[in-house]
Image 1 (tube, one colour):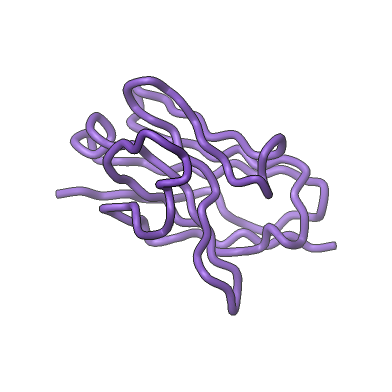
Image 2 (cartoon, helix red, strand yellow):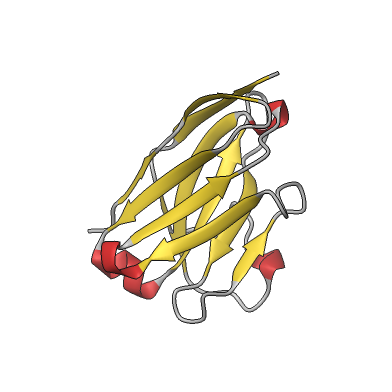
Amino acid sequence: QVQLVESGGGSVQAGGSLRLSCAASKRTYNTYTMGWFRQAPGKEREFVGTIDYSSGNTCYADSVKGRFTVSRDNAKNTVYLQMNSLKPEDTAVYYCAAGTYRSGCYYYTDRWPDYWGQGTQVTVSS
């Protein structure tokens, strides 16, 4: 059974940092590309970033490039989203996701994941 469990959300002031974690079942972690999406109130869910298990290659949305970093700890079957220089527009529910590898970053839309976590709230105040 595939399970993705996020943690680390919370409230922070603009300019601050947060790190989200996603603990995955071993079968998920060893097979799939892992990623993060977010959904702000009244908006569509959008891609944030992914990391491939085999190559470690990453993809990022333009809105977070240079501020957010996706990484992984293979020993812990855990993927992280380090968020720096946070802005009020980063406020959203953040979801961990897993799916099969894609050869181009443009494939990682909200239709890509095979599995979703339950989400964790991130609130950035100005």
